[in-house]
Image (tube, rainbow, N blue to C red):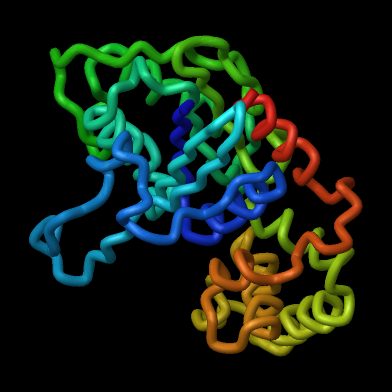
Length: 275
């Protein structure tokens, strides 16, 4: 069995990662008893894990593929872009890094360009190699031996090593944006009867609001319209469900051409990381 760890920002990132893994023949592990013992340290045994009752305890999503090329993949949700490195550090301190075949981070570019976001994450990984750092809000302890991570040269690249290491910056390692860019582009192909009206509703709400309306401030952020559109489509598919649940269960990729922003490059990244 070969073991791979992916750290993503949010639940719908994890769900989409899982959809792509299932395309590659992986099955989701549904029970704690079925989790490979290698990942046992990542399963919380006590609640609350800290002193904050509103903290949501989330197990990593686990996927496995049997056969001659047996693989086990854990997808860990960081809960935000500022926690990607600390989540990775915490996992690597528990696991036997040198027994792993792959480690990757999947992050949103947001309103930055991908090389800038990649540089931020690369600096954090460099610090992890030095001292389990990088300290500050990301945690870590100075003077503690670091990890044997071979670092990639650019976003979307896979650094050959034990383990292989990659950083993917959504949506396509080039443009600003998030996973929602990919989701809405896929919905335009697979769910046009939902995507068009959802986009129109978001645009109408924005146009109907006044300048400086605080209620619309989140919508008017660079990623706001696409996030809102993806959320509407998700609720139309599965009313009352979170976007992550809709992504996992819905037909977002049913008629995708593969030319949607970021889809082909993310599929290629994942295939190379698992190769």
